[in-house]
Image 1 (cartoon, helix red, strand yellow):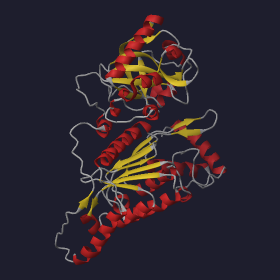
Image 2 (cartoon, one colour):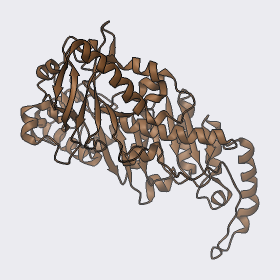
Image 3 (cartoon, helix red, strand yellow):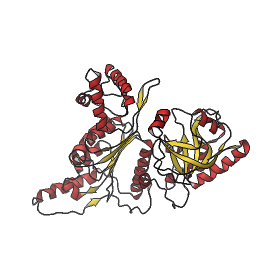
Image 4 (tube, helix red, strand yellow):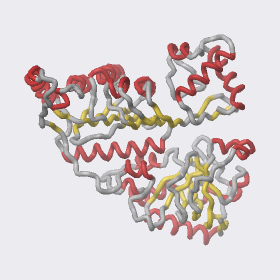
Length: 472
C-alpha cells in the first residue's frame, strides 16, 4: 500500500468505527462482510489510530489486495477490484461472498461433501430468492467411499438447488451473481475448503472475467440439458442410498481396492476447439492467428459519462488524454499488433439517452509489457492509478463531429443481434438483455467480422458527411 493513502485510511477507519458499523468496514471494504469477531481479532475495535492502522494493514495483507482506489470527493467510499490467491481460509472467503449473493449461485465441483452441502442447504432455505445450480459427478463408488456425499446432494435438492450430473467432470468453479468468482483446485467438500492443500484464485468485482465464467457455465449447462438425462432426481438418490446400505458394510478390508462402475449423468464429447472458458484463459479467438482481431474499445464509465457535445479530439483534450493512446484497467494482453479497435464512447445519444457511441476506429501497435504508467506518471495524472495500461494507435480515423452524431451501440445490436459477438454464435436464442449485458463494465470486447463490416460502412457515411480526425 502506498504511503500517501495512510492519512485517508485512518480518517475513513475512524469514521467507520464511530458509526459502529457492526458488520464490518462497509465504508472501506464494501464487497466484504467483515465479521465483528474477525475485526476484533485484527485490532479494528481499539480506540487509537495506531491500533486501527495495525489491524487494517494485517487484514489487507491477509486478503492480498492488489488494488484499492479511494474516492475522496463527495461521499467517501472505496471502489475495489481484487484478484488474489487463496491458499487457506477458503471457507471464510466463500461464506463472505455467499452473504453478498442476491440472485444466483452457480457451482461446478466433482465432489460434494456432507458438511459443506449442509451449510449451503441451510443458507438456501434462508434465502429462497437465490437460484442455485450445481454441476457435479454422480458416481456410486465415490458415494460408497464417502469422497462425495449423496446425502449432501439430497439436502441441497430439498433446499431447492438444481443438480446436474456430468460424467468425467474435473472443473471446479464457484460463481456469485455476476460480481465474483472462485477458480481453483478445491472441491466443495470440507477437505477441499478447510483441511487439504489447495489453491484458488478469487476474483471480486471483476465483471469482465465473471461474464466469461458465466458464459462457460451456461454453455456447459445447456449442453447437459440438450443431451438430456443429466438432472439429478430423488429417485437416483434413493437408489444410491440403498446401494450404500448394502455394499459399504462389506468393505472392511482396507488393503483391498474395490471398484464399482455404476454412474449416472451425461457424457459429453471432448472439447476439440476453443470454448468460452479457454478464450478467457488464453485470450485468443476461435479463428486463425493470421487474421486481425476486432474489438470495441470503451472510453469513459457508466458513473462518469463523457459529454456528448464534444468530438473525439476535444474529448481527449478536455480529459487530458493522449490522442493516440487508449487506456485499460487491466493488461489487454489479447490485443496484438494490427488489431482493429472501434472507439466506443460511454456517453449519450442525440436524445440524451445513455448509450455507448461508436465514433471511429484505430489500428494498434498491440500491447507490450512495458505499456504501463510508471509511478511518476501516476503521481502527475492520478486517473492512471485506475487505468495504468495502454496501447498506441498506428493509424485510424474519428468522426469530426460531436459524439452524439456517432453510431449507437444499440443500433449495432438491432442490426446484427447475436452475430455481434463471437461467443454468442453457437447460441440458439439470445435476448436483447443478454446483448446489453455483454459489454457491461468492460474496457474492451471482441466482435465479429460481420460487426466490423457493418461499423466500417456506417462510419464511412459519417466521414463523408462530417469529415474526420486523423489518428496515429
